[in-house]
Amino acid sequence: MRPLLPLLAAAAIGCSNITDVGNGVVELDVTIPPRLELEVGDTLQLSARALDRNGEVVAAEITWATPDPTIGVVAATGQVTGLAPGPGRVQAAQGTLISDFLTFNVLGRADSLALPAGGAVTVAADAQSSAPLAVTLLGAPDVTLAGHRVILTITAPAFADPATRTVQFPNGALADTVTTAADGTLTTPVTVDRVTGTTAPATATVTVEATRPSGAAVPGSGQTFTVTFE
Image (tube, rainbow, N blue to C red; front, side, top):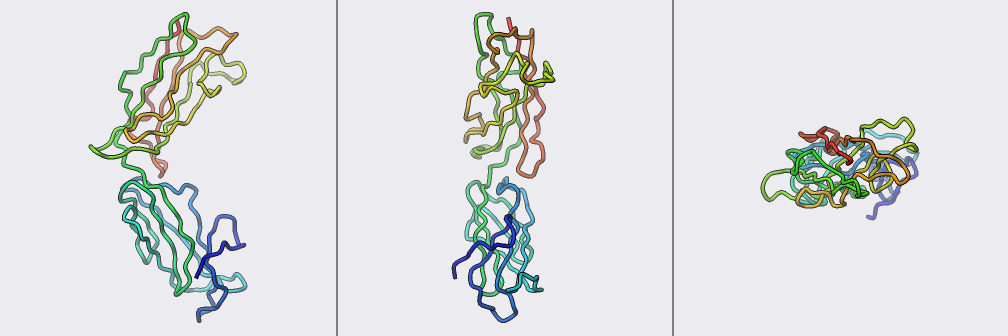
């Protein structure tokens, strides 16, 4: 049977057939996590409800399964674990009713964040921008690190009104989030730029952070660049 989206909640996926399977259950209401991402080794608890034709909860056993080797799931509880990088699908079932797949992106495990060229950057007097800031996520040998999010923030000088900033990133802001390539480097170069028509400060500080899908910080987060303007 083919799954259909239920009308019960925006953050849920359901099953198809409105036919009673013998215990009053006609639909599965699966809660969608805020981020459909896992890192290898991380776990996440899924949840679902069995509903009758009136939208009332039915006490019925829900099981979970995945067809993919990148992700593991405990059939009785819905706890999922990232096993290998790549997409991984999970679905709930109650008897013959099945939900749509939840598709997770499983990321390789990042061990630490590094600034391989060091934290000192100089912008020549006749230059508009710094060289690209070198940031790398490190992991075990042969682990792909694509898809992680690295957040760079200009934390000093502190501009109470961003409109008065005298330095910025290429996106025209004081913060930027960039994903990583398979080798852990940034997919988009990030520089620190002078704002045209203003006087750059003597130095600017850029703080670099990376968080796991679980919300935990990758070790090494919080390191800084000191950008000196000549």
